[in-house]
Length: 257
Image 1: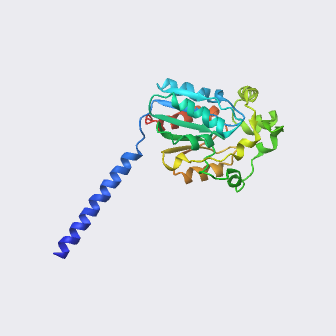
Image 2: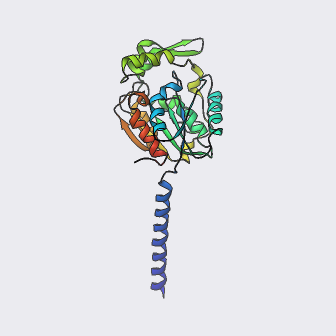
Image 3: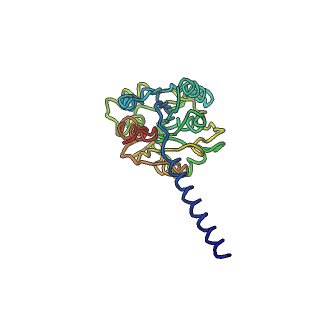
């Protein structure tokens, strides 16, 4: 009788494990989403997503690029929440660079089905991201940050050499002219949430990044257990590798090939 009971328990355990594995597999499959909201980072604006937007629209997705005010975390979060409120269903939320801070905070919205970080910050709730970054190499773009009474911009030399490395020079100069002045206080802002704890996450590491350490990007991607791709690109992979970035977003939207 005891042997029978033990056998039954083992069989039940195996069935339970199989069902759990099947459920986990089902959960891992991305929810099909037809909306994408894009968040730009510091020293940029929504136009930095232009090539990615064209590819996503060609795939039939509804795309919105947020124009972050870059004067405070609260205002940038409000701008993204406003964009999310206008979406009509499942939405993939995507961010580049500092925009990942906004992504981590706003990605808890029920409409958001997946998160995509592109060479982006990904803070935990309440985390001192400046202190975390200090554990990794300081990148050369830092020397080109110019502070004008609390508002920062990048020098042209730093923008072209280190922020837009890998981008065609003529296009890089256009992006330099379009850069969004960014409050110095923005970088120390702390989130109250970290959506990557509860939402499927994807990360595009820029292997030649001179703005955020590629090793920091890898650390963040591993910490959130993200589906990760590594791109032969500088910080602006959304410009220089728009196809690869768009493909990652399509995968997060459950529309990858």
